[in-house]
Amino acid sequence: MSSTSKEAILAAAKRTAQAHGYNGLNFRDLADEVGIKAASIYYHFPSKADLGTAVARRYWEDTAAALEAMSAETPDPIRCLRRYPDVFRRALEKDNRMCLCSIMAAEYDDLPDPVKREVQTFADINVAWLSKLLSAASVVAPEDSEPRGRAIFAAIAGAQLIARSRSDVSLYDALIDSYRTAGLLPA
Amino acid sequence: MSSTSKEAILAAAKRTAQAHGYNGLNFRDLADEVGIKAASIYYHFPSKADLGTAVARRYWEDTAAALEAMSAETPDPIRCLRRYPDVFRRALEKDNRMCLCSIMAAEYDDLPDPVKREVQTFADINVAWLSKLLSAASVVAPEDSEPRGRAIFAAIAGAQLIARSRSDVSLYDALIDSYRTAGLLPA
DNA sequence: CATTGCCTATCAAGTGGTAGATAGACGTTG
DNA sequence: CAACGTCTATCTACCACTTGATAGGCAATG
Image 1: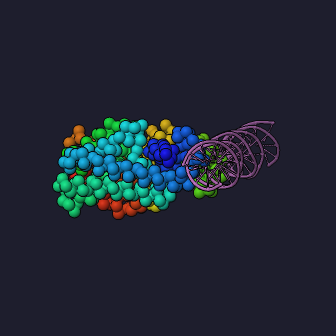
Image 2: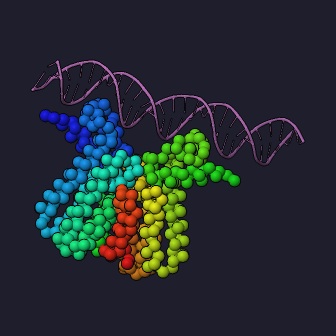
Image 3: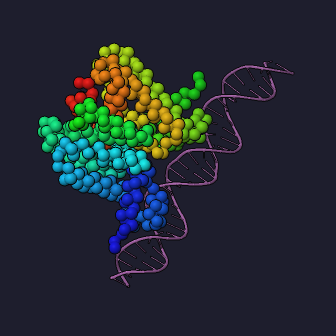
């Protein structure tokens, strides 16, 4: 079997990065968690930048798959859109973590360029998914679906950020609720 | 005059932290920027945690003053609320920086407790100011003004975060625009 | 016997923090 | 006035530790 280690490294790095960001990643702790030595990580990832890129790419790939699964499972676009905030809620539930790409957006200046690109792709796939469903649900005019999708994505990222700064998932719920009341999210 | 250095350190630390966060602060670079030696910073701030706390406190104090000035200058609450997003826009204009407290919210797990408290206070004063004006402007029912204030604050923080990840101020403007269209912000 | 996957050992750079010295300003006191 | 002690603000010189990264070796597998 080729490298179960590689997958384990990716998984551990993802968890750590969701709590401490790209800068919070370090090879020693990562290796400890996986059960190998720090130097061995270099066998699988030639540099920290490569590891960071792989983690961020895997993250949006997984998210894209999860979103596709969600819209397959819930064909009604309005009901499906209603479930979208749950995706971001789950990170908070799991030890007050964040969306990997939000935390990396905050570190933007310190990110290697390839990592930046993956972070942007994450935003792109979210906005694309949202705007497709907004369009399908006729929540907004088709030409407004992309800006609205972007707005929803940004607002939810913000809600997660603020809720995290209080370690309070219920604050996240309250914010999503307010977005609905205000008309940003379909009620 | 007692320590112009202390003020210079605070100012430099604020600038750096708005781009690289609390973890991005380091005494050598800070000292270089101010024109003193790293060890000398310890004369003014006994530890990095103390420096971070002082920076964050100063930040919300300045913000509170700016918000008060704004509502004094623009008595009409609706017009004043319209100006609120400008406060966060200015950070992006200045070399793609962020609100200090948003970037620190992302680093939440690595923050000393006193710093966390200052970060939360920043959110508090913003929400209080917003909900006061929302109430005065009768945008929402008085009992809904606080949740709505929170929602606006979170959404704007999110817009700043996303715009930063693209180094694109015009994206921020577009997001604020969408918030207005959607009804989150008074149009 | 070459490749795979991991190891030990080490490095250079950078980190927050400490110890102790110094130079000048200031006020008090003989 | 001059000598003294003290306070302020800074310095030089370290230290212990962490970081990403490299070199080279070792055992198993096919």
